[in-house]
Image 1 (spheres, rainbow, N blue to C red):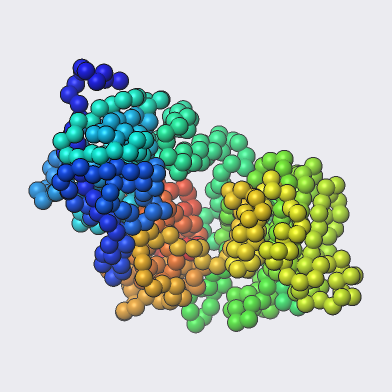
Image 2 (cartoon, rainbow, N blue to C red):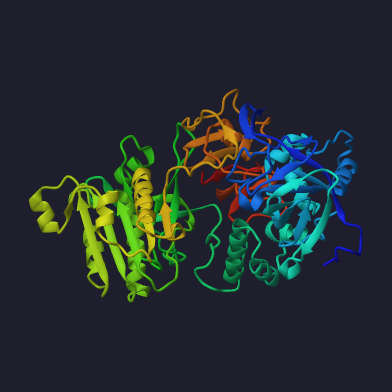
Length: 588
């Protein structure tokens, strides 16, 4: 630490910049953002959540106590002026609150403390990679450039409130523990070639913001998985694209549900699937592009054949074909087992909660409990209309009978009293109140599958009675919820083909959304095509940095412009900067 009375000259606060949220037109949409900052004269009060006169448009990604003040350096201004050939920058151009002379990212460390004016601050994390800095600068690739050139800037929290103003000296009052610089922390999260020792060092820094701390813990878990610790991370698909499997049997389970057994055409055992994973089936038609649907595997893990149990949905072309037309000996195109809705290792209680056809992955998990987790407390909770709609009930009940510590609760909402007595079922729907009355253990890991409204209600009920939200795991086969930070205005239209003349590029199929369309020449990325189709999307940086947009690639090949700073794992694609080089099928 540099003593206050000697050493190099102290850094200086050159400008204080503030801005309130405003609605900004962007690519045909409206973004709520406060990235437009302007310099202010005179003192400004630094408070716990921000500076007086400042605000954040998206508090999920910006602001809060850990990100009260954003700092960027005058030296980086000069660097980007040269790199971009610009001479029009003004203070606040990079969305920062404090423009400083000094405090470079490769010297400032997480946990360093500084006194400016009457206030004291602590460095908590590098800048969030966000597309809005690219909006502000008119440089869409700016989020990737900030990371790739090791000049992100950083956030501070306010330890002591006070007045600050341009011209104030910046005095370091304490060194952060571990000596992890802002630039190194940023690279550790976003760039390849991570050192596990550095990840562990980062998790030991108390000042590091909780979000970054959790991200580093997840990266450590992935490193452990790469070194053979089972159950800590996702596995690579057993085969690329679609493979032909033979239907070995079709078994009606109820009037609307049939189990379809799939085997290798040559009779060899299929690669083992984990309990809770799903298969994606492609059904070709003569009148339109192939339809793609995903179905949970309901058979025991490690079976030589896969079983999917399919409910015929009204108007469902694929489910109707599978339950009504498919016969033993038929061939189907099937993608490898995928999904992270799998049992976590542990010794505590497990809640397997489902409704309707959501029983299928839970049944595979129950098979795994019988084989590997017999000493754990297992709670089986299922809801159905009645015995005629309760698929796979006998199989589940037989498995439960073999476990020494089991709690079985079945709810039939439309059964007669006699049916409920014979089936040992409870009346009514599986609601929040009904679940709370069961007195389930709050230390359990919970696995939920069923209709979206059911899953959301049960998730809320479990967290309300005390379960850690991180221990509640869900599976849905509808489209995933969108992550579109800052975008405001109407949305929620059903997915549809894009407007305008059809494209001429490779066929892009959004499997969950039932949209297949040729890639248009005007689209810069798969993400832009998805947005034009109102396919729900998830993104943040839009330049291949943050991996928020990572999506399972079921088949096909893509290229990248710009290239991502770190490639995604095999079997995934970063849709924000990807362009198809062949026909592709995406799980979105």
